[in-house]
Image (tube, rainbow, N blue to C red; front, side, top):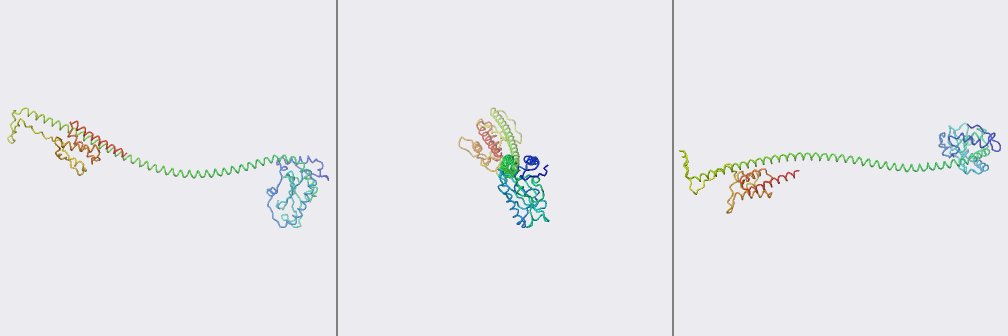
Length: 423
C-alpha cells in the first residue's frame, strides 16, 4: 500500500529513490497493469464511477481559466522533460462523479504514455460549475494508475502546477522503457484481438449466410415433405385402384376358367354322345348287313294289327336307322346371328357342287371364320356349342376333325388373348 511521498526542491522524493518509488507503484499495480495502459477521454467518460456527462453553460468562464493553466502545465512539462516529451493536451467534457461536476485534463507523451489530472469545484453547489468557481485538482493519473498520493503532499489544496509537472514527468520518464516494452507486447495482443475481431466478423457473416441457407433448406425440406405426403397419398390411392383392378381381374379370370371348364365338359359330353351315336349307327349297319346276307330267311309273323314286313330285293339297301342322338345341322348364316336371335337347329345345307358334301362345306366355312378370327360370335360362349355340334358330326374322319380341332384351338387362343388384355 502506497503512502504519502514528500518531494524536495529538485523534484526528487524524500527518504526514497525515484526507482524505489516507481517500483512500489508498479508492485501496487501488479494485478491490474494500469501504469502500462494509457488513458483516453472515452476511458474517463465510460468509467463506471462516471455517473453522467454534463452540458453546462456556466462552464465557459472556469473552462477558459482551466485551459490556460493546462497550457502552462504543458510548457512546464516540455521544459522539465528529457527524451519523453508531451505532444498534446485535451480537456474532457464535464462529467459527474459521486454527485460532483468534474473535468479531466489529458496530456499525451511522445512514447504513448498519458498524464491525467481530475479537477472539481468544491463549493456549495458541487454539481454545478459557477462562472467564478475555482477548479481544484484532486486526482492524478500516470496512464491509468492513480499516483495522487505520491505527487501531492498536501491533498485538497491547489498545487503549484510547475512543481507537480516536474514530479510527474520524472516518473513518466522512468516508466517509459518498461511502458514501451509492455505496449509492444500489448500492440501485438491488440493486433491479434483486432484480427480476431475481423475474423469474428467474417465468421459471423458466414454464420449468418449459413443460417440463411439453413432456413432456405428447411423451407425446401418442408415443401418436399408436403410433396412427399401428397405423393404417398396419390400412390396409396393408385395402389388401392390396382388392387381393386387385380381383384376384379382375378374374379373375371376365375369366371372365364369356370366357363372354359364348363365348355370342355360339354365338349367331352358331346364327344361321348357322338361316340355312342356312332356305335349305334355301326350296330344298325351291321344288323342291316346281316339282313341282306340272309334274304330268304323266314321273317316272324307280324301281329294282326301290324303291317307285314315287305321283303327286300337283292339290289335294295335297307334304310339307315334314324340316329335320334345326332345333332341337327345349323345354317352358317344362323351362326353369325346374335345368340338371342339365333335358332338352335341348323337347317339342312343347300346342295353343293357335284361331288361335294353340302354339310361339310357349310361346317368348313364356319370353322374357317373361327380360324381367321372373323366369326361374328368370337366373344360369345355359345360358339362352343356350335363347335361341339360340328365336332360330333365329323368325329371319326381324321381329316375333318383336324380342321375342327384347329378351329377349337384358334378360338381358345383368342379367348386367352382377350384375358391377357384384361390383365
